[in-house]
Amino acid sequence: MMKKVAMVAAAAAMVLPLGLGAIAPAMGTTTAFAATKTAAKKTTYNLKSATTLKKTAYHVKTGKPTLFSGAFAADRAKVTFAKKGTLKTGTTYYATKKVVVTTKATKKAKAKTMTCVYVKTANGKVKGWVAFGDLAAGKATKKAVVKKATKKATTKKAVKADKATGKTYTLLKAKTLKKTAYHYKAAAPAFYTGKFAADQSKVTLTKKGVLPASKTFYATKEITVKQNKKNVKYLYVTNNKTKGFVQANKLTAGAFKAAD
Image (cartoon, rainbow, N blue to C red):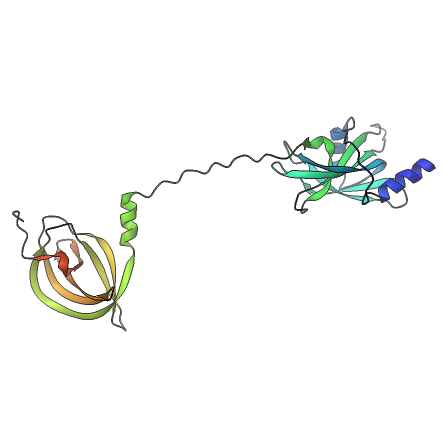
């Protein structure tokens, strides 16, 4: 009678400090636990002992051990476990309580003893009972994540991205010109497409590329825009498939000659 009262008191005191005790796995712990956790969603066991532990770190090496909730009977030495989830590798769990329970003997199997510990994560979001044999001592070590090297943007991609960026300017003046020949002497200037707003004096210039070398270009239009607080002139030039707006100060009047 006194032994039964002691077990009931231990079950009722699982939420109170009970003194420190060493964790020692019982024989057949994992096998017995695996057999019972698949048998039913809720299983009641005889409570053999209950101990509060010094907070100790554990982790899962392999697999996904089942995590259980535990309901302790108030008037007898019994505990009922119900599956609530699983634990995973790569996470540290802290054990604070231990119970030793026995399974009920059947015609086909003898009663077996198993040890379970109450664990929870550092943030307390995951907590419950797990078979002690499914845990390994110590904190989990996370594998280093190797980031795949990203390819640097090539010059070609950079130029393509630059082409797609358009800038909008205030249109001050626009006029048609008599077809006039031009060429350039220094570095190849950029040429742009021009998109004119229908309801306001605005034009958006978007880079298409640079003018080809050793060519004559023919200007047929001229626009003046407000750019960086300055009045800047652009000429609309063509040469076969090349056509667009070019800053006027980048061009030289006259047809291209090899002597240039």
